[in-house]
Length: 119
Image (cartoon, rainbow, N blue to C red):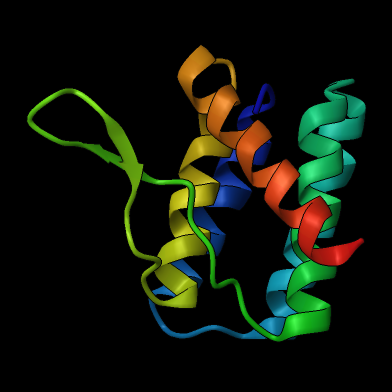
């Protein structure tokens, strides 16, 4: 995210995830970050943050990851999702460095997954 203040919010959210998955607090924090993305005029981040908060509200979890590994032949594959907190932490790390082209691709993949699950 562009604003340093937003990255501080992400760090605080990651730290709170270490203590547990508090659905209500997480949704509120994601919507707060969405407001920052709107100020930054970043529609991808605004959309994926809204979808993530809706998904958590509806499902009560965050049970998907876009984290990948490579095999010996260089083929990428999704790793098995971890805990809700681990999956969301990975997602938040992508958002912190959303200007990285590889992170943006993974953010787009997460957006697509969330849209398919919700709609």
